[in-house]
Structure formats: structure tokens, C-alpha cells
Length: 132
Ligand SMILES: [Zn+2]
Image (cartoon, rainbow, N blue to C red; front, top):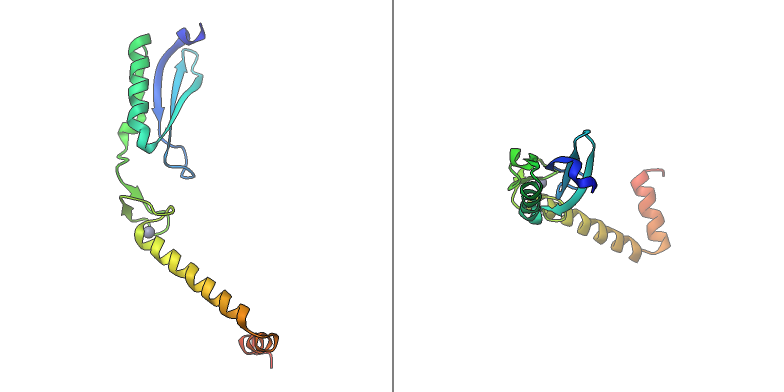
């Protein structure tokens, strides 16, 4: 039974910001190699801790919870860097609203453009480019 060679179990923080809501539990072998044994989203982090703790107790492994070092109750918006309780589409509320407004503006401009005749399009390109 290979798991008997494990000496500890640890929970690691997300390693990059691509997916900051993703936590991993590893069993660490006596030779230093590690095996991924479980994973959890932020909302299930406590379950992951419980599982790791249970395994550590059962098999006599050490339990290292690296997520304790950092407070994960707050998040930072990747756009403005402000702390936020909840991310909306990956951003704080202000940035999310601003992003939605920019998108709406873009759609509105696109729609308006689509309603122009070819002649009107041509003349707006000319006036924008100041070619003539
Ligand atoms: Zn923001």
C-alpha cells in the first residue's frame, strides 16, 4: 500500500491568479515527492481542511495547512486592486459596473453603426479619418 510511505499532508494555496478559488491537498512522500489527493473551491476549503486533517490523524501524518497563512476572506479586484468581498464576473462591483457600461456603449455604437446606410458609413469614416 503505497500511501503508507506518505509522511504528511498539506493544503496549498492557489499557485497563480488564474484560478484563485482553487485549493489543492497533497500527500507528501518520505522521498519528498507529492501526490495530489484532493481539490476544492474556496467555498469548500473547510471541507478540504477537514479531509486532510482526518487523513493525517488516521495515518499519523503531519498536517500542514498553508492556507492558514493567508486570509482568504477578502479578495482583490484584478483591475483596480481594491479589496472586495465578492467578485462580479471576476472584478469588484465598481469595475464590473464600469465594464458593463463600456460594453453597453460599445454595443450601442455598434448598433448605431449597423443602422447607417453605406453612404453614411462612408462619410463617417471620412470625417473620422479626416482624409478629405
Ligand atoms: Zn475593481
